[in-house]
Length: 135
Image (cartoon, rainbow, N blue to C red; front, side):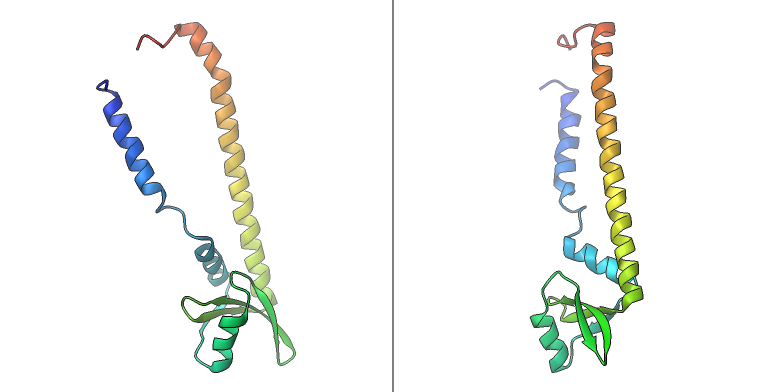
């Protein structure tokens, strides 16, 4: 192996090892957004609450009517708790989802533009410097 390739290989190995730790799970992202949007985290302690945790669709917000008022409820079966909010918290959550999706879309577009710019520049480098195969 050529001496300059060893540090590059070590860097690639380190990046691969740490890449799995950097991405939060979808559930963690949803719960973080719900909490940031003002949803209350209620530990499921009563039989009715425990029943909601078990019966509501996992990974989804569900509208539950209580005393004639709609509530948005997200069950967390792992922690035996419920995220509960009303219309204002739901709207804040939706806004956070849209902002996050727009940011991801912008990042993808920027990455695509960068890759296209790099690919467009390659012929000029090859013409100006000749072949790189000798190195």
